[in-house]
Image (cartoon, rainbow, N blue to C red):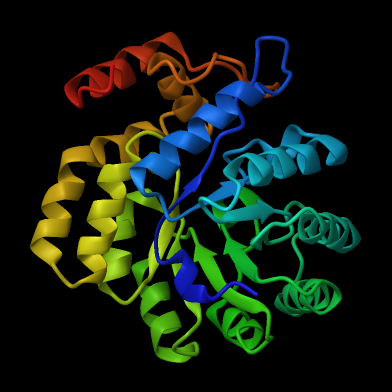
Length: 296
């Protein structure tokens, strides 16, 4: 089973590139995988929120993960996004991810049905007990309408194959509590690019990032500097790319990041309804960012 240390640093929440007809663009996906291997990205999260997990059918979901694993060929760890608001579906996806060789799974808190804290605990505990693979909790209340409390995260940190959490609250008081209360080997990753450096300086181990799709090498360097306690250097480097942490969320993720990668020549414009291509007014803003950063 994957060690938590395997995932220290910058992990990319990779997009799922698509053609204009909504089909997955597998050659573009392969190019993105090579891009991250060359950049030194820690790991890839396949078919998470940024990978449009909400709009892919289960067979396609598994196929994209499997293609990522097979093409990566051990050059970079692959974490499968296998969360669902149905516990049985999450178990099915997690079992399939294990079968096809994923290194770990990332499981978002059940969205829409708004479970209690006890429901969150029982949901994640049952998945972990049902599938023997390293698992990461994923708390993103801004998208799921439910917030996993620190108490619940601490309870789940005692489950053997739950190795860590991706916290996307952007609330730095949460990381302070997690550092103080979770086991020392429990992986603490941020899912909020804007506060990532401060999260790491407070004791976090890295992050699962949207911005890493665009500037993977720069973000990895910033994260590693922060983990080494070189706060001034980490902040200075992060400041050079911080505009992306804001402007990649001008519209709902992954709308802006898919457009940015399209402009960089790494994929087409394809994105699935109900998401649409980035609005022209925001294309102007993000396009200027890409020019300033010499990414075009």
